[in-house]
Length: 175
Image (cartoon, rainbow, N blue to C red):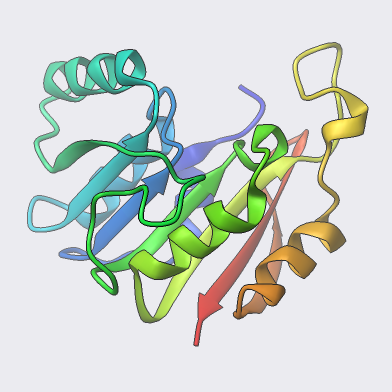
C-alpha cells in the first residue's frame, strides 16, 4: 500500500468519543482507521458523492463489526452540499481527493463548516505520479499549494508529516 491510513490517523491525535468526517471517503480506508481510533462512543461520518462506494463501505464496516461509521451521501463541492450541521465534528480527513476536485475551495470551506472551533484536519495528498498509480503530473497539488488553499479558507497550518512513500500529509486547525 502506498499510504497507511492507520499510521496517518494516529498523527491526528483522535481520542475515544470524538466525531470525525471523512470527506470524500471513497473506499473507506480512512473511515475504518478513524472508527477504530474513536472507539464505540465515537462517530465517523463517511461522506462521498458516489453511492456505490458508500454501500461497499457500509458492507465492509459490517463485516469488520465496526458500528460507529455512518455513511453520508453528500457533495462537498457544493455549499451546504454535505447534509450535516455546522460545528458538529472534532476532526476531518481529506485524503487523496483534492487533486481531482474541480472546486477545491468549496470542498475546503465545506470541511471547515463542519468542524468545531479548534477542530483539526488531516490532509493527505499524492506527492508524485508513480507509474500511473497517482494523478497525472498536471493535477498534483504541491504541499505549498495545499497550505495556501487551506490558509486562504482560514485554517492554521500546524505541521507537515510523512504519509507514505508517495504521499505527504499536513495537519491544519480551524480557529
